[in-house]
Image (cartoon, rainbow, N blue to C red; front, side):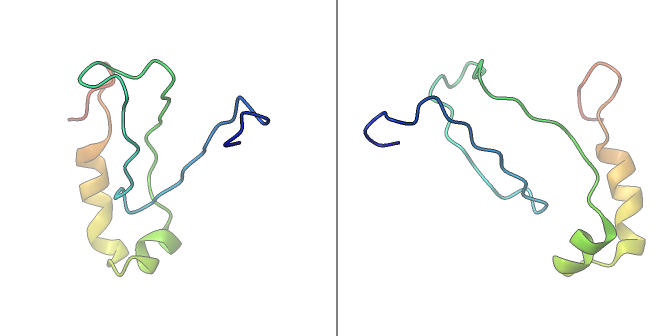
Length: 72
């Protein structure tokens, strides 16, 4: 990859904690090649991070994107 022999490539990142960061070379504008989607964590992911699943479902409802794509 470093020598350009395996281009193009893509990276798919699934980080339930939400602590990952990939630098946007076009900042402060949006990166036209970046795609993301919102998802709810599974109960297993919630437990693996040390959270109580009973307390997280209300928080997830509050963070769901509105119909216009913005987070409420």
